[in-house]
Structures are given as C-alpha cells and as structure tokens.
Length: 282
Image 1: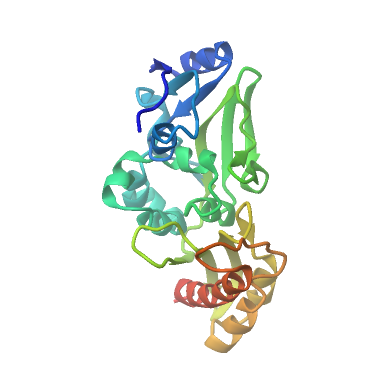
Image 2: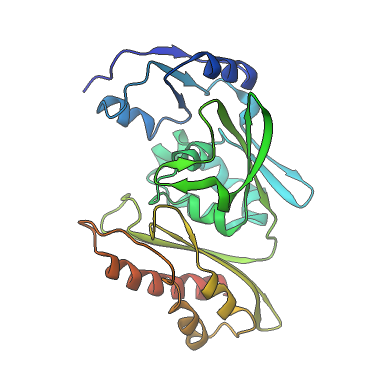
C-alpha cells in the first residue's frame, strides 16, 4: 500500500528539527524507519509531516563520559552491538542488540528509535531498564534526563512529549559484570514472546549484585526485583538460581494472544530467567 501524502523535512541539526516540531500540528519523527515506514505504508498512521533525523550527525556515536557510556539516539543497532565500549561496559545491551531482527534491519534501525517506539515486545527496552539507563530528552523547554523506569509509560508510550526529541542514552558502566539476553520466539526474527535481560556481578563465588528485566511481560518492560533480591548473596548454582527465578513473574501482567496466554508467558519467564542468570554468572 502507498502512504498518504505528507510533507517531508530532513533537518541537519537538533535545533532545526525541534523548530520543525514546534511548527507542525501533526508530525512523526523518522529515525531508522524500521517501525514507522511499515505503519505509514499500511496507513495505520497518516501524519501531515515527517521529520527525518537521518542527516543529524551529532545524534550518532558512542563515547565515554566518566562512569557512563553515552550513545547517540541515531546510532544504528549494528554499531551498538559491535562497539568496544558497549561490549566492555554494557555487555548486556550489546548481546540484546545482536538479537534484533536481521542484519539489514540492524544496519538501518537505531537505538533511540527503538526506545521511543516503546513496543513492549522490543528487545532493547528491558536491557536499558536493567542497566539503569538515563535518557536525555531535548525540547522547547530545554534538556532533561529521564530514568529508564520513568521513560516507558505504557503501550507505545514514553515520557517524550510531542515537541521533544530523544538525543542520547547514558548507560552506567557495568564493567566486569556478566550478562545474558535470553529470548523465546517461534520463528526466526519474530518479536520476543518473552525475553529476559540479566546482568550480574559475581564476587568471591557469590552473586554480589544482580539486575534482571523482562520483555513482553506487560505494557512496559518490568524489573524482576524479587529475583534480584533473592540472588544477592547466593552462589550461582542451578538450585539457587532456579529458586530465585521462580519469582520472576511476580507483579507482571503478560498479554494473552495467538503466541500464548498469560500463564504460558509466566512459565517462560521463570525458565528464561534461570537460563539468563546462570549464563551471566558464568
């Protein structure tokens, strides 16, 4: 199907993009386009204006900033997955990004676009939550930083206002932490039916710190805090990890659809949490 008519703009700076946003009544922002373009072609959305961020080089790249790494919102998935800073200091994000769709999508899609799209089955929301990412948003009122737990506000809904842009993602360094992203799908390149993002720090044969988040177990990514508390101080044995992982579905509200009902997803969450934590703990 052919999209409805719209005005197209490709600004070369963030300020120019924000100015266009302020002047448009019904605008959509185009990042990598891997989510928006299919929606436009199916006419599930018919904006009057599309603002393409592809020419804003300042929104790309990965750099160090003290105890954090900073990733531009327009940085492509394949860059995130392969970048040595990400692999050293935020390995969980690199591993999860490797599972996104296929190489073609990973070369076009962007980290910022995936986070703002906020699909609860998307694979990058839970790692951002588990790693305690801080998301930098810029708009007419200036620049503000939003914690990941406050950024995702509902189904396809985030803290980014209509006149704002996500410009960068700040990820606290988790240097030396083990990490694993476990996802379950029925066919290759499918959205996750359930997935688990786990990163742990083992010290002296016991788990000193653990952060676990779940994909597609609610309308937003969910921290499995009960699992985290149960893991701390435990040896990373199958018995101890399995007992902690049994708490994974506490407080979640998974959907029921053609891929499985809510109880099936709760079971998957416990199984995948066990696998992810054991792998992360080595």
